[in-house]
Image 1 (cartoon, rainbow, N blue to C red):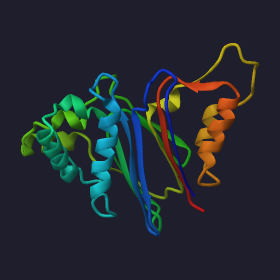
Image 2: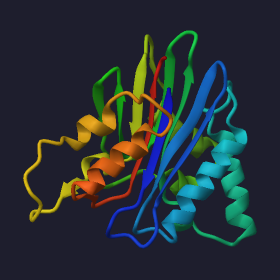
Image 3: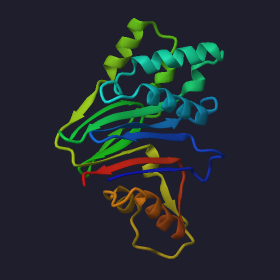
Image 4: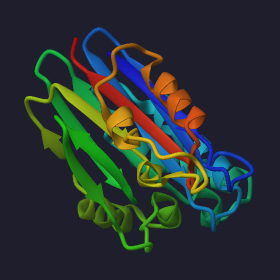
Length: 222
């Protein structure tokens, strides 16, 4: 079962996160993209980079970023933009259902959970954005990619890929006390395609809110 969530922070005018996911009989491919608030039109950055990866994502190429990088170079050139227009983290993945193999490639901050185990990717607010390398030579870009190799996990029966908003769920200090644990709700393996939206409605109705945009791709084998 596959479910996604994409929610705006109460402090933002527009959501700077973007989610892309595609499921076939054998594969799930996609990514979570988190635009940087100090970039230029960061909501555009995350959405454009997501579109770019979606264009080239196939079961065999979704983790190869070279084609997406070249496409972003052309967009930058044709629209006379700067790397600041492309400042967004990228957490892209491919999951092969028959072998239960998950492959990830991560550029920037974020969290992911494999079979209930948490993994944090933290660059201490000094994110090495993919967009910052649009002026690289092919050799320079190769060196950049070597710093962030593909990560592989076997025997994966459930996973969640999240922007760092997963750690920014807060609750009004004036609300009555509750036993609800937001992480427990949001990270529970989904039971339906709208599972995450229903859990967020529960949290919202109990005075929880976000201090950063939140995106989640959650999957569990049926």
